[in-house]
Image (cartoon, rainbow, N blue to C red; front, side, top):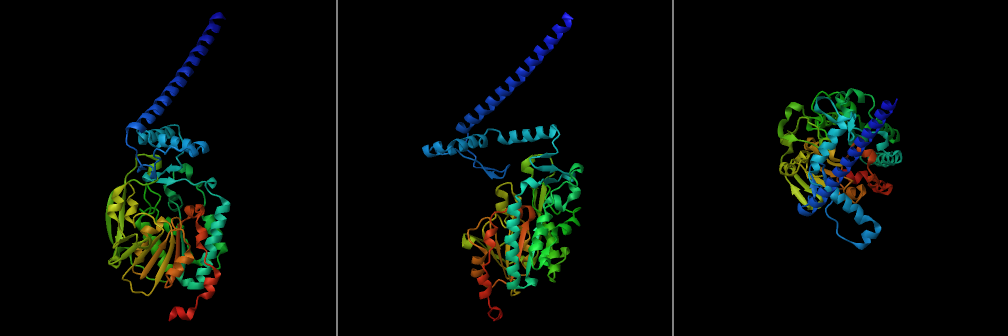
Length: 417
């Protein structure tokens, strides 16, 4: 009995020593990392942007007693130490590897899917139901007024699904059937519209092509091929002619693209290629950004896309509040697109349909859509194009308001003069 008690005490003592060693090692590692971060922040030059994480990094904050008292300085300084940590990218990779080793089904909100696809995971908790309802109210009121003003045949709304919604066959088996159903927001929108038929069912269109390269494996955006299928369906919905896919010269511009979804997980998957669908109708073109801040003569910005990791910037470069495009179409029609970044690789397909295309991204502008319609009084068509999940989370859709007085002032006889 005495030997048994001695063995038990020995095992407990040994176990406690092991726990103590593990905790000590953890503390030493933490202090080492913290010290390395502190000294590297002093010695090494500061990085202002992380290509890996696709965001601005916190640089050393300026000392201010006001910020000290409010606590802002301490918070920014802590973020600064984290952001300027030596070998930060390698630590991010290590953290992701550890999450996968312990069996997490998703990493940083990303499913590791089939055929090298990385698919964003959305849950109900990612969305505010009040915000979603407010957004569908704003958009439905705008579209209802636009139909009155421009006619049902000249107004359209394209809600673009997430990759998981468009390509459910690429989901890992445990995730099938559990993806958040964003189409409920689309259904809510349709119920509030006087003419719900102006909403194009892009999700089912893309699902029919999910065995093709319609979304990037490593980025949340669709490819030019995915945008083409949506364009062809949009043209058919409005009774317009769309060129066959074979009519375009398809050119691969990049073959080294790792996108924003990859930057959340850093797993070994094939690089993406970025293609453009070129048509002679896209030349010549004149593009002006934000009322003359920048100008170009092409839809494609190869040099801008090469500056960082984001090859999707090939399409119209960075997002901006307003883009004005003049084409050689000579159709007598002008289009206003209310959009997010999914429209950037879609719009080149419209070059033969409109003389003028005005693209407005409400996330970056301070004005309203009413201001744009007053500035461009020759607008004949309106399109709204959003990724559904981003639409649900947007907090800028109040700028969609078209005052009813503006509608009453509109004179149809003057329009056709």
